[in-house]
Length: 119
Image 1 (tube, helix red, strand yellow):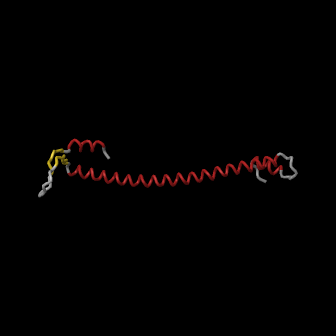
Image 2 (cartoon, one colour):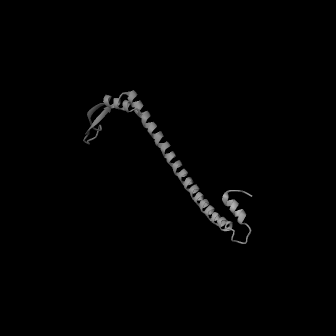
Image 3 (tube, rainbow, N blue to C red):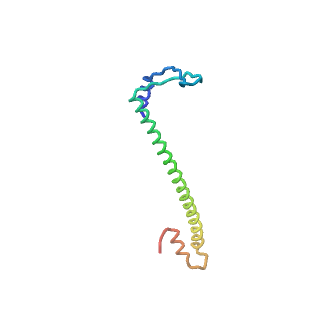
């Protein structure tokens, strides 16, 4: 939407004070303002209003997608935290066996695992 075009339309619009009364009724009428706009300007304003509706619809879809992705991200983060906790427990167990004070014979394997080596 062009701000400049909108300002130009505002400057060109003709505002008139008119009296409105329904025909064949006893009801009193009322005073109001009537706005006259050039046809090209009117068409442009309608196009802009339609574009705003499209953008609002797109925004609503993007918000839904954002909420879905945020929920998925939170789930992945929860899984990652669980894996870190599991890793910490396993590391403690490996450190326990790597100390070599235990009669299991797996101290060397545990030390290699802690150092990042494979068998």
